[in-house]
Image: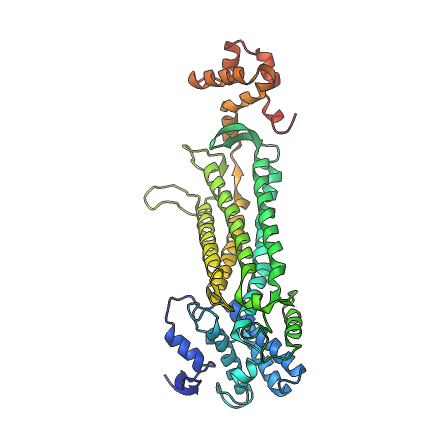
Length: 462
């Protein structure tokens, strides 16, 4: 492979001739051969937004020649558009400040800008990766700013719309079955009646709560660290840089970004992301409940509840012919486990801020973006492949309702709890219906039983 020589403060190093990156990227590529999890492209593209905004602001403030700013903006736009994705090879497991990925962005943008200027790919002339692309910046404020932009974009563009897809799909089914009465269950044991629509409406409300929790966590993430430079003081930046770059980033991304009022906190802590991670975990908990409940209700088809017929998407067994499994429920519950685990990682990583800097930034953003992607894909896929095609087994629901012992609860107000309990006990032990047991015990007449024990009247306060 042909190479070219690039240099940094350590010295010279050979870089692939066709690469836009420079010495620091190459050193990171060689020094951190750990795992296969590359820095998310969402972070890379957000870093390019930072570099573009910084160049524009620095030129406006007279800190950078306009011709160099224009070259940086042009190259950054190519990165944002995904045209240079192959030139960002670094992994998540690198320096905890994200310095190598920040320099990867600086070097690629400079390398491409220099090529545009006719000086060949890479190098430092006329655009220098540190002096020009990274001007008025540090990895310590640029990387967290990129983290926040990437997370906000993923939440708004992927996750929130996906939650709505699943929420609305469940709402359609809840309205479809609003009058279908079935046996309720508490402690996995028979309880008083509900409608299938009421049962499904709980998931709609739970998803609404989880969505609200996520939405409420996002405004705080709009406070960005850019302008704090190395430790939060803003050293080597123009006094107006922080406010102007926040406004420019807001204009570029369409996000309501503002400059963080305390840059020291913005560099040293990421509690705002912990709150978001907790909200993502809340959604995961809701999805786990949804998956487990539909898995139980669909169990069978002959030896389980068999009250819900889930779509048969694929054969379920390599040995048992005709078997179909609740695979969508299983996939959704597995990704929920992953998101809950990711939240633990984010919490631990965010707790490791020492003095002026938290140095667990890459693993925080990696886990957050993975959680958002999993939850978004999971919501849409579950709606498409499961919820939209599920149907109630009305015959089975009616049979369970007819045989349910807890219908006896309707008699409490007429004959008292203790007498009602006698009826339920006799019916269970002698395998009789509640009506038979009640009449034999001479606690109610047949006419009274018909009048008082009506499942459709047990669905709301009397």
